[in-house]
Image (cartoon, rainbow, N blue to C red):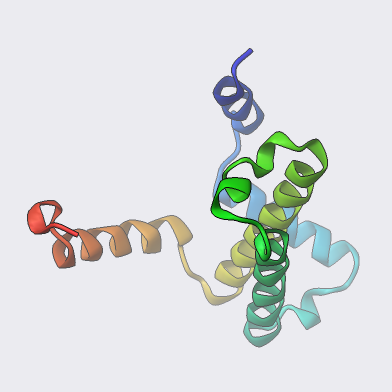
Length: 120
């Protein structure tokens, strides 16, 4: 089974809204909503992104390109990516941001700012 297929299979039926509801239910069950302010979630997002960067900090470009070949490193990368995404989705939920719409609008703006025929 190809890695691409595995990735697709693991995400079948998932969408942002479902994940946001699961995260909200997880926080509510632990009475954590009071801590999930925009400021706290932005700070937590930054911390988790820094933990992802830390994995790559002293790797050469070649080593970083192969990081997923090491089972332990791959697990750490996936965990940190999940943490970053979890905090980002919670942040968007608290502020009423549609993450996918915001991303689509940003791509549209970047396509206008940086035309493909504009070189590097």
